[in-house]
Image (cartoon, rainbow, N blue to C red; front, side):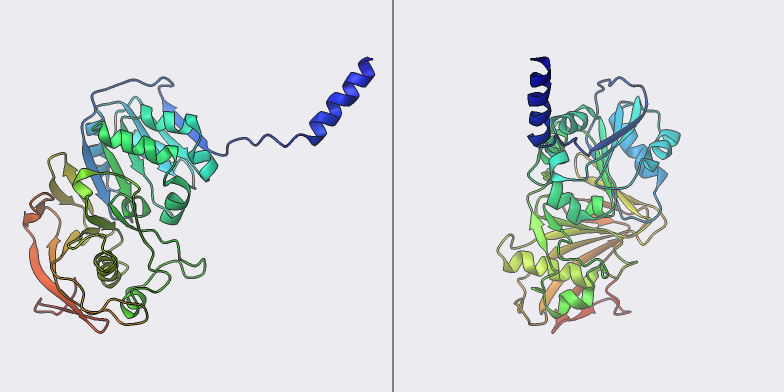
Length: 332
């Protein structure tokens, strides 16, 4: 009888579908127990390249000594020791969420919900959109934002925080960066993947965000993205916050912002008229785009869309070629 039972049990185990362990990773240093602090809202938009201590201290201060969480879809926990070395927080942890299944784990959402400050690392924003959009992760992040807690992002982590997103879902492994010349030549080129509906930050409504801006010559492709947003009737007057490498924009809850870091700063771009030509297979024609270049120490108000310490100028695109009202003729 015992042998028969064991045989049946063994057969059931052999034919049952395998139980898949979740593939998320959670690596934490500091206090093993969460604490709850009165975190206050604020945003750190980092352009990539070298990390800026001041930007992370800004997030830590807003988190009021609570639990600091780094989110990523791949990679390791290098940020843990870095953040821990410059901030006094209850804990610093990295949560790696490498699949859609992991993004829908209740425990993953719980970890995000318990954090006082969240930072989205760089990497590949296509993974964030493919795996995290419309998931428990997105719900938890939006609850974090709605609760008035601080949020930051760098590189791909900055690219996904605006209402409008270049999702990079058409990028190719051997050619990973959509170039301005490609987007300007055809704004409906299959790699021009503009998405929306991931995070809900009031100050970034109607706004596109981008990083590595001057270093990787991204102005032209940004103009193509903005033209697409208008042409596809998502918005008549979209805006963009584009940040260069080694620069960051630190934003208070009321929309007041300042630029830090030794990079080229930030570019605040606003559409003032619909594109004249924005369609498949035709080079872009798009006029009267307002640009405000905010270098280090410049100030800007995201609500009034005005600033001090920077330079204003206008760009136009004619048959895929960008021109500027600046004396140098540079788009930057």
